[in-house]
Length: 480
Image 1 (tube, rainbow, N blue to C red):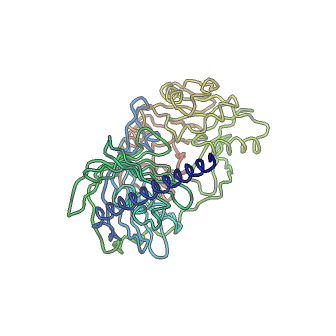
Image 2 (tube, rainbow, N blue to C red):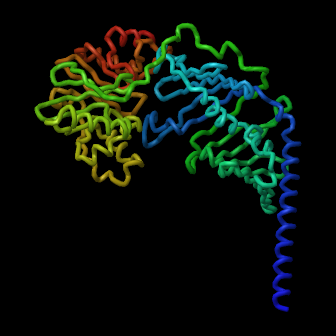
C-alpha cells in the first residue's frame, strides 16, 4: 500500500516537473519569437558602418597626466564590416594628454590583412601583417556595441528548447535569457519588457559585461546610443562608447581594403633575444632584433645602473637573466624610472625582490607606491629620490614638467653626448616625422637647446634608438 502511494507520488512529481519544463520551453520559444519580430528589420543586415567615439580606461594607466586624478583617453572610431565576405576596415584615432595622436588602421580583404599607422607616430611607414583570424576578433567586440547585433546568436539558435532558459522578474518587469553554447559557456541577456529593449549582456566567452542606454531611432533602426563595457569583472567600465551613426552598406569600400601608397615594408617582429652593443665607455644599448623596446646599462666598476628595463614583467625577467649571463661579475644596483605610467613600471616588483634600488623623482615614487599591482609588497621597494640635475656615476638627470606626465625625467650622458628618454620624442624606426607633434616634444627640445646639452644621439625607450639631431629638429619644426 505504502509502496503504491510512494510510486504514485513520484509519478505525479515527475509529471508536474515535465509539465513545468514543457511550459518553460514553450514560453522561451514564445519570447524568442517576440524578439525576432522586434529585431526583424535588422536581421538581414550583412554589411554596415559604425561611427562612434569612446572614453577609454584601458589606456589610462599608460597616459594619465596626474596619477591622483587619472583621466580617460578619448578615441574616435570608424569601422566598416561585411559579415559574409569577412571584410573589415577599422580606423581608430586615439587622443592622449599633451597632444599625442595615434591614427591607426587595420583591415582585411579576401587574401590578407594589415595594420598601419596613418599618424606616423609609432610605426612610420612600416606595416604589421595580421593573420586571417583577426576578423573574428574585431567583429566579436564590435557587435557587442550594437544591441541588435549582440542578440543575433540568441535569435539564430536552432535548438532553443535545449540551449535557452528564461527567468521573468515581475517586480522589475525584466526577462533574463541564458544561452548555453556548445562549448558550455553561457551568455546572459537581460531585457526590459515594456518597451522591449536589451538592458545588458553578460558574455562569459568574452569575459565582458555590456550595458545599453539611451535608445533612439534613426532611419527606421532603433539602437542604444551609449554602451558601457566592463571586462574581467571590473565594476567601473573600461570603455564608455557613444554610437554616433550607423549605416547599412552594400560592401566595405574597396579602396579601404588595401595599403596606401608608400606603406610597403613589414615591421620586423623580432626574436625576443636580447643583445648588447657598446655606445661609449661603459654604456651599453640592450635590445632585440626588432628594436621596439630599448634599454641602457651604465656599468661603473662592479655596479650596473639600468634605464628602461621595467616596462613589463617579461622584460624585467629577460634583463635580469641577460645581466647575469653577460655581466657575471657585475651587480645590478639601481633602475631609473622616468615617470609612473604602467608601461614604465609594470616590472618593478621583480627588481624590488632582488633589493635593486629604484631611482626616480618624488612624484614618480608616489605614483609607484599608489600602483595597485604593488600594494602587497611595496614595503620591499627600496627608493632613492632623484633631484633635478643630479649626477650619479656620470649620468645626469633632468626632471621636467610636461603635459604627458606631471613629472617626467630623462638622463644625459655628457661624455658620450647621449640622451635616454621615454615619451618625450615619438620617432619611428624609419625616421618618419609624425603628422601631429605633441607639445611636450617642444618642451623637451627647448630644454635641450636652452641648456646646450651635448648631443650626438637620442635613444628612445620605445621605437627608434638612434634619433639624430637632424631628425629631432625636423620633429620640432613640424610642430611649428
